[in-house]
Length: 472
Image 1 (spheres, rainbow, N blue to C red):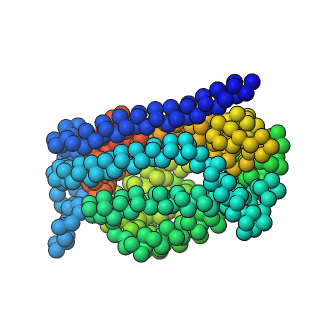
Image 2: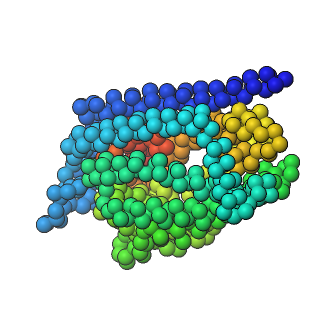
Image 3: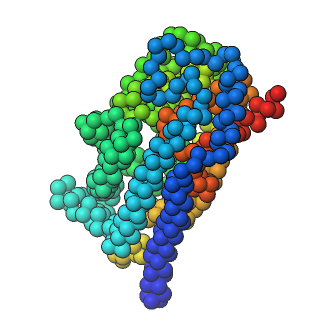
């Protein structure tokens, strides 16, 4: 019987390592395909055809604004010129930026594989847990069996510190080498480390109580603990949807009301037309860290807010901002926001139910170094091992499914903005954002299918063009 158990433990470890290597190999093939796509020197023909049609429509549109006298176009998009030649001029920069990012991604992924397998083979989790027990006993007089949750918090602290240390060189290189090289990094070292300190403290202040409550519920909930865990996770998610934007995000960025003017008036009018319960409009100083742009909505129930990056306002014109927000409001109007919440909750419910089936699987835990006969496996460790082993293949499949769903929703939101009469403005806005952010203009189709939550630029532009044709 003992030999059979040993065989099962060896099988569990081997399958985990095999799956980890398989995923790495698959993603490495896709990364290499993308790297080859970034080596292309010729501007993609389909994008050229699509954007030339947009330029032709833009040229014949009397509502298109012209460059004002004295306006500086030495940097960024020149609205007085056609879009296509500007994208073509930026193509080489975009390819170089993409090459640097994908090469770095391939290296960091390889490091992640080596780290994961090494930690697994050397028994990293048992070692850190034993270290946590030792520290708890020595400095806080904690007993492992009686104070498991407190020991788990020490474990969380140690693993957070180790994760911060191992990821820091990669984040610094990405920020201060790649992003800075291509003109996107605006932050200082002081701001970078200040963000790290704030993030780490918030992880402990929020993550600590959350983990403690989660472990307490699992121990208290009995056979159907997964139902209580799911309910707790749901209410925590809803609470964080409100707390994070209002209390946490302002710790990192400044949020100021959008100044009065035509843009604000038009946004409020569009929100009213769509019955979107807009309460506040903010501009966020995203430029203090990066030149990349964005816009997002937040809030729960009838208290909705919209945030525009200051970089977005610099990159696109007022009508294009409206078209982009029309897209974002489309996600809300079409139920995508609620759909994402439901999908997330179903995912969590399924995950915790499956965990409940494996919670008492001693063979699984012994396979990864927790082999004490009289020593119960810590719940924290059981959770980590479950999500790193049994749930990992399921998670990859579900992650791909949600990526496909996200792309479908993006097309639907584009259609919603187009149906509001803003299709052409959305197209020019997307082109400008891609130009300013050096977006990928010819991504590998298989790489995009696997990784991209948003369709490639040319697919979105082509779809909007077809929609505009149907409207006549």
